[in-house]
Image 1 (cartoon, rainbow, N blue to C red):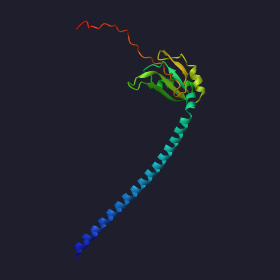
Image 2: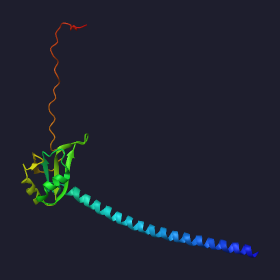
Image 3: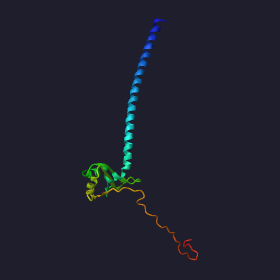
Image 4: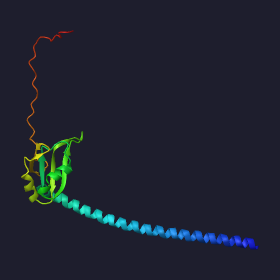
Length: 176
């Protein structure tokens, strides 16, 4: 081998070594990122488990939530949840404000539900019955627990439509 060839081989070996070092650095960075992502996924799983635990307790405590909620009627159609929250803020800590809307048109139905943190806040909210909100008197009542099948009406007796008296004469159309 000549001197030039050995020099080229040495330069190529140095380039290969640099590339290997760069790849090792990239590999280490990827391993660090993978470890971070695994930690984040563990945290997310823990959070999901907490949420599942909370939702199962919410399903069980639905009646208790209804006892902490009140029904608001005659709500202005352009009212926002923030405005209702501001109006009932003095009653107690508000967890949620729900303004019901028509599922087909998306227009408000004119009533809302407010869920409070404490049961005592519902009694304070009931004192705001007939209070003015956007030049309309609000109707405030306790939220009733929805019982499936409670409001169903017994099927009524169906009777067949009776035929009218038919004359024995044939019917003639007047415009034929």
